[in-house]
Amino acid sequence: MPIALGMLIAAEGGYREAVLGSINYGRDSDSIAVMAGSIAGALGGLAAVPGEWIDGVNEGSRSVARDVWAADAARAADVAALRTGFAVSLEVA
Image 1: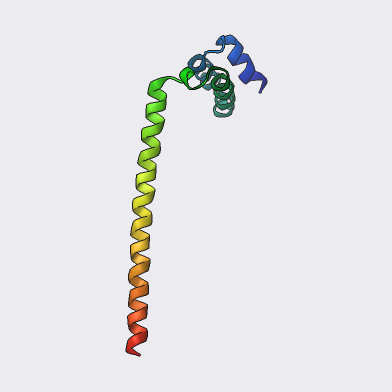
Image 2: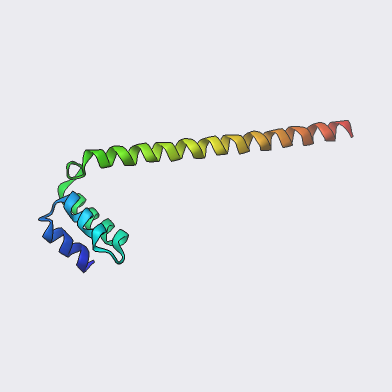
């Protein structure tokens, strides 16, 4: 947390500068960047976050959601087919 706060001070509260400075710091940079970005975002609101970053995260999230949905739909279809086959085999017996 102290490094994240230091990055925030060095960036004069700027979201982009605090996050990029934290990432480039090294060590546990992902955690430091998350803390610095969270504080900068809390202080500046959504307007503080660069629009292209928001767009990138939104598109990535949608892409992952579509992939997960497609995989779940395929698994559900497989389970339904197995259950139908099982029910038919019980009726025949």
